[in-house]
Length: 428
Image 1 (tube, rainbow, N blue to C red):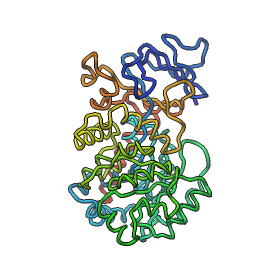
Image 2: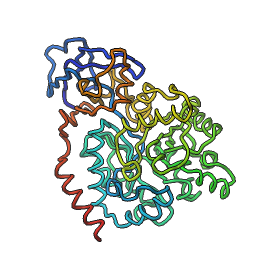
Image 3: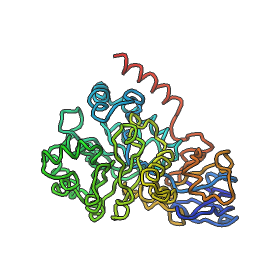
Image 4: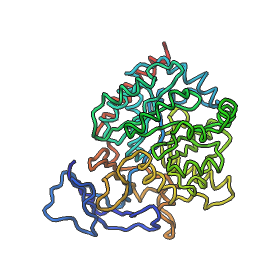
């Protein structure tokens, strides 16, 4: 870790603060955020980077709790379809052509997009997990890699392969691993029970798609005689280690079961709406039940953006509109879901902007035209509704992007390689 001084910043200490505190200096050292002082920094301190943040607001970094970065390779390829058509007719046929080096390139492009979006930590569920992990390690971001597990003959996706990948990786650093059973309909009862056993034995998180469509629930009730959350409970997967992506078609009783177990769920409103899934995750009920709810963009083939700020705005407005309640899930709640809750869902260090915090920080330009408004405006509302661009990104005390220039990855080389890769995939 290096020493970084962020000078003359404006900050909010937590997502429920309405006003910015201006003229602070943030000193980052070996122990994360070491001090936040008004108008001064520790004298005689070593500083590898001094970043002038005049006119900028600094917040905790954002966490994208559910995505498939390799699907940048399919962005725009399957628009205008329902989920089953999208998967069966357009996505899976292309994915069968993908080689590990293709996926590495797609992941690297997704990582650069994530950095520019102010994401400092994310979960990725996809194939060729060793390549995903290598790309993640080079990015400087915190990444939870969840190798996708299928029982349907998808190459490189068996439970044994997943465990082999996890067991072969070094422990430590910013890249960690979870178990990624794709869904109830793609994994057998035997596989899910083994996932639970390994999760308990190795203290590994389990990341799964849950109740994304009404059809899934209908099929689960027909084949299992119970709803999906109840089935996960039967498989002994319902615990604080579980992260359930989507959780759209669930009842209040199922929300209570998730909350009682201390599980996490991921709200993916843009992807769910684009795939016309006909429902909205009951986020207020999940939060009230004690579920740890965060945001996810889902993959670039079903969103098609990796912007978590866009996802926060869309999710907040969608819930307000559908419930006739402008306070249904406010921007302040959204910001907490995208920072504190997201990091908790990935077992990353507690994400708070205070001395002792992990020094995962992002900075926005307050003088962007879209950020200028009434003196009475609440900062969380401006951030979520106005969607400012991100200027600086620091992860674990290390600058990843300064003045909108990515320091950890060669963005131009990645874009050139990506275009060549896509041309090769779709012409073969």
